[in-house]
Length: 141
Image (cartoon, rainbow, N blue to C red):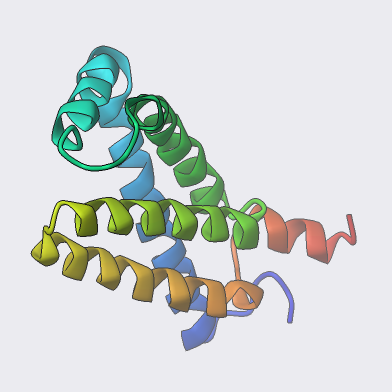
Protein backbone atom coordinates (compact mmCIF):
# COMPACT_ATOMS: atom_id res chain seq x y z
CA UNK A 1 0.00 0.00 0.00
CA UNK A 2 1.35 3.44 -0.83
CA UNK A 3 0.90 6.66 1.14
CA UNK A 4 -1.87 8.01 -1.09
CA UNK A 5 -4.18 4.99 -1.28
CA UNK A 6 -7.56 6.16 -0.01
CA UNK A 7 -10.11 3.45 0.59
CA UNK A 8 -12.70 3.35 3.35
CA UNK A 9 -10.36 1.74 5.86
CA UNK A 10 -7.51 4.21 5.32
CA UNK A 11 -9.85 7.21 5.48
CA UNK A 12 -11.58 5.87 8.60
CA UNK A 13 -8.18 5.27 10.19
CA UNK A 14 -7.10 8.82 9.36
CA UNK A 15 -10.25 10.42 10.76
CA UNK A 16 -10.17 8.30 13.93
CA UNK A 17 -6.47 9.04 14.46
CA UNK A 18 -7.05 12.79 14.11
CA UNK A 19 -10.09 12.68 16.43
CA UNK A 20 -8.20 10.78 19.14
CA UNK A 21 -5.21 13.08 18.79
CA UNK A 22 -7.39 16.21 18.92
CA UNK A 23 -9.12 14.92 22.04
CA UNK A 24 -5.83 14.31 23.82
CA UNK A 25 -4.29 17.54 22.57
CA UNK A 26 -7.31 19.54 23.70
CA UNK A 27 -7.22 17.98 27.16
CA UNK A 28 -3.50 18.69 27.43
CA UNK A 29 -3.72 22.31 26.24
CA UNK A 30 -6.59 23.16 28.59
CA UNK A 31 -4.81 21.67 31.59
CA UNK A 32 -1.42 23.24 30.92
CA UNK A 33 -0.56 26.84 31.67
CA UNK A 34 -2.65 28.56 34.35
CA UNK A 35 -4.69 25.43 35.08
CA UNK A 36 -1.74 23.08 35.56
CA UNK A 37 -1.48 23.56 39.33
CA UNK A 38 -5.27 23.68 39.67
CA UNK A 39 -5.52 20.31 37.90
CA UNK A 40 -2.88 18.76 40.18
CA UNK A 41 -4.67 20.00 43.30
CA UNK A 42 -8.02 18.81 41.92
CA UNK A 43 -6.61 15.30 41.42
CA UNK A 44 -5.24 15.23 44.98
CA UNK A 45 -8.56 16.43 46.41
CA UNK A 46 -10.71 14.15 44.23
CA UNK A 47 -8.82 11.02 45.27
CA UNK A 48 -8.08 12.00 48.88
CA UNK A 49 -10.51 9.40 50.27
CA UNK A 50 -9.08 6.55 48.19
CA UNK A 51 -6.24 4.21 49.18
CA UNK A 52 -3.93 5.86 46.62
CA UNK A 53 -0.88 7.54 48.21
CA UNK A 54 -0.70 11.33 47.89
CA UNK A 55 2.72 11.12 46.23
CA UNK A 56 1.18 9.05 43.42
CA UNK A 57 -1.72 11.49 43.08
CA UNK A 58 0.68 14.41 42.91
CA UNK A 59 2.81 12.62 40.29
CA UNK A 60 -0.25 11.80 38.18
CA UNK A 61 -1.38 15.41 38.43
CA UNK A 62 1.97 16.51 37.02
CA UNK A 63 2.26 13.77 34.39
CA UNK A 64 -1.23 13.63 32.85
CA UNK A 65 -1.45 17.08 31.15
CA UNK A 66 1.93 17.05 29.36
CA UNK A 67 1.42 13.39 28.46
CA UNK A 68 -1.97 14.19 26.90
CA UNK A 69 -0.44 17.12 25.02
CA UNK A 70 2.52 15.12 23.69
CA UNK A 71 0.49 12.04 22.78
CA UNK A 72 -2.11 14.23 21.06
CA UNK A 73 0.55 15.83 18.85
CA UNK A 74 2.22 12.48 18.06
CA UNK A 75 -1.09 10.81 17.18
CA UNK A 76 -2.29 13.69 14.99
CA UNK A 77 1.03 13.65 13.14
CA UNK A 78 0.97 9.87 12.93
CA UNK A 79 4.47 9.61 14.36
CA UNK A 80 5.25 6.44 16.32
CA UNK A 81 1.51 5.97 16.12
CA UNK A 82 1.33 2.41 17.42
CA UNK A 83 3.28 3.14 20.59
CA UNK A 84 1.62 6.52 21.08
CA UNK A 85 -1.78 4.80 20.96
CA UNK A 86 -0.55 2.09 23.35
CA UNK A 87 0.62 4.76 25.82
CA UNK A 88 -2.66 6.66 25.42
CA UNK A 89 -4.54 3.40 26.07
CA UNK A 90 -2.51 2.75 29.21
CA UNK A 91 -3.17 6.30 30.37
CA UNK A 92 -6.89 5.68 29.86
CA UNK A 93 -6.58 2.42 31.83
CA UNK A 94 -5.17 4.40 34.75
CA UNK A 95 -8.05 6.88 34.48
CA UNK A 96 -10.56 4.01 34.39
CA UNK A 97 -8.99 2.51 37.52
CA UNK A 98 -9.23 5.87 39.27
CA UNK A 99 -12.89 6.30 38.39
CA UNK A 100 -13.58 2.74 39.60
CA UNK A 101 -12.06 3.64 42.97
CA UNK A 102 -14.44 6.61 43.10
CA UNK A 103 -17.35 4.42 41.95
CA UNK A 104 -18.06 6.82 39.06
CA UNK A 105 -19.52 4.09 36.88
CA UNK A 106 -21.08 6.44 34.32
CA UNK A 107 -17.65 7.96 33.68
CA UNK A 108 -16.12 4.47 33.45
CA UNK A 109 -18.70 3.66 30.78
CA UNK A 110 -17.65 6.71 28.75
CA UNK A 111 -13.99 5.81 29.22
CA UNK A 112 -14.69 2.30 27.94
CA UNK A 113 -16.01 3.89 24.73
CA UNK A 114 -12.64 5.65 24.45
CA UNK A 115 -10.98 2.24 24.82
CA UNK A 116 -13.05 0.88 21.92
CA UNK A 117 -11.83 3.82 19.82
CA UNK A 118 -8.23 3.07 20.84
CA UNK A 119 -8.80 -0.57 19.90
CA UNK A 120 -9.99 0.37 16.41
CA UNK A 121 -7.17 2.88 15.98
CA UNK A 122 -4.56 0.31 17.02
CA UNK A 123 -6.20 -2.33 14.85
CA UNK A 124 -5.91 -0.07 11.80
CA UNK A 125 -2.45 1.36 12.51
CA UNK A 126 -1.04 -0.37 9.41
CA UNK A 127 -3.62 1.37 7.21
CA UNK A 128 -2.43 4.90 7.85
CA UNK A 129 -2.28 7.68 5.31
CA UNK A 130 -1.05 11.23 5.73
CA UNK A 131 1.21 10.32 8.63
CA UNK A 132 4.88 10.62 9.47
CA UNK A 133 4.95 6.83 9.92
CA UNK A 134 3.59 6.16 6.41
CA UNK A 135 5.99 8.72 4.93
CA UNK A 136 8.97 7.10 6.66
CA UNK A 137 7.76 3.63 5.63
CA UNK A 138 7.43 4.80 2.03
CA UNK A 139 10.97 6.20 2.17
CA UNK A 140 12.28 3.10 4.00
CA UNK A 141 13.64 5.26 6.82
